[in-house]
Length: 548
Image 1: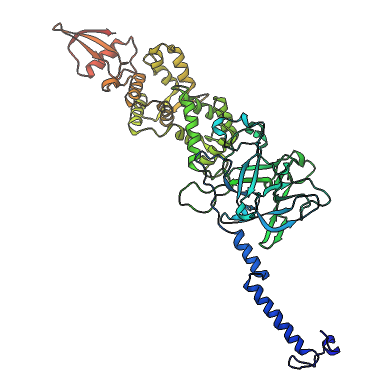
Image 2 (image 1 turned 120 degrees about the vertical axis):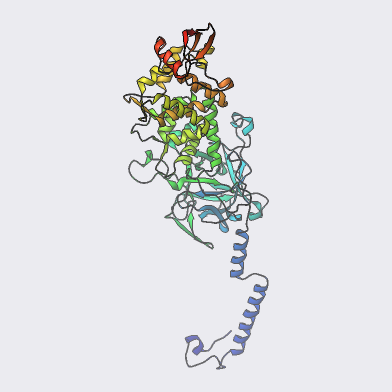
């Protein structure tokens, strides 16, 4: 096509209607361009249409695997990977590709926020054969454990290829590095290589070794470690990555320990913290869960741990609950009846109950109502033993009233020690313990160093601990009545510790009578026993003597 000098110089004196030069060819060219664009539009070949089609395909909804009843992560599960630093999810754009000679074709990985699972941010956990597979329990063959190798694959529905694309990284070279931070580039590739192998590591450095080989919990914060390069999966808020989906976050291979001269000794930052996010376990509930703050754990998880601790306490016998309560109260240095995570863990271990760090987190998350990092010892013990019935509380109150003669609400501990009767204690009757051994256990159970009084609340808490392993109300009642010489009870719950006397009447008849509620009558106080009988209406007798 030829143009006039005026056209080439952009002369403004000529309008669109001025027909000079090759105006016919210009009109024909515009018509051809219009027809070509229309044909491309009809075939979906316009750039805007291609982007919309890509968006539609990448954001196709996908169903995540619901959280398993035991909370463990398993091979074959469809999950999302969430970063704790910005709550974005690991995702891909299939058109963000890099081709480098001598390297597999890569699809770049980023992180972006999402309100639902879709093709671009859902991953499948795949097993990697390892020589250590036989070290895991047979019943956990499909469970992913800490430091166990695995791969993360995209669904083939997204890639459309014969081979699935797996998460991959490699060492930084002159041509392979992340676009923004210049750290290790993270992508997905379809070529089998050790660069696809990852391991989950505990984020708590204090328990990292102990957690090796333990099952990983759904939604728990972990480190995704790449053993081939000794770096962790990382996504920092400051590193933005622009693509067709907008501003997202770069993902790279980098162990982020913060800044400073001593950063090598610091723990990994939140940019290295990731979580396997599952669908909510509740049927009909949509959306995704969030990476665990451990204070947002389900009640079901807490119940599993509570039952585990309870079973171990029951195996320790009648004083199991009281013993743990005493140990936890001893660790309460400031007397506020609250313990932090490390005090709770130390107390349980001191009493022979070892929980995994994740289980300690579950306990703390369940009972730390105000988020101050401490839990109430009383609430924890109540959850373990369950609430005491009103019937049993009534028996405990009756016993305390027998001791609190002046109604002041306070009883001296020394007096309680003297009045407590161990002769009818089950362990004494069975011969497994001597009366002195039972008495010493009773004294130790109170932890009364320097404190000389017992309130009703303390008295009630003691019997709440003893009540937990006792199924029978009759047995509990008999224990209360015999220990504090409370008369009454029916059947097997009838008191047997109050003294019985053989009364000889003036007519020669003899009857066996009970010295009721004789807790404060010494064994040699015959006058006190006589007054007790007379108070019951038993008068006019010739003599009486102890009856065994």
